[in-house]
Length: 235
Image (cartoon, rainbow, N blue to C red; front, side, top):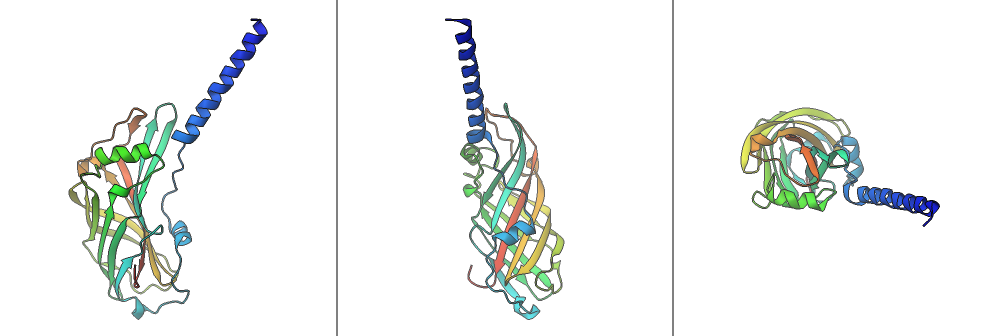
């Protein structure tokens, strides 16, 4: 075998190795994580029930979450993967139900329930691990939020953004703690759209950090985020 053939063979092997590494990154490690929640992205996901503005009196009563792709609850956690560096893991579930009660000036009650057993990210391996590690959704499939202090929002007109810090009890991994949520809401097309988030320290909920061969490290906290669409009609 000539030196030239050896060189060519080595170049081919190198090219195949690089191609294999790139393919492995693309299909197994590459993150397609969605961006953090925002009212802008939420509005794109909404199919308005009506394009007519509702008067303040029409808003009084109990609103229900619209089930489907528009409403979800999820997490964001920073991790470091072997050979590929920093990554943000994002998982979401559309299995969310709940109600919001408004008296014409104040949100007096909010009750939200999410099925964590249906959380899905861009990696099925991660989703499977979370059923038995960390949040252990096979043991603790339900997370809930209950408002503990009324929210004075007045009578905002259609299209006006309302920003509030909301207090409530969050139950996660079988532990209930008081939390503060940073939320934004808007009345749009006969629906109330709310997005928000809060930082969750895993130790506060007796959550152990998950372990996997490809995960070199993971933060000891993460972000719980949500996008909720409410309607006074059938949900």
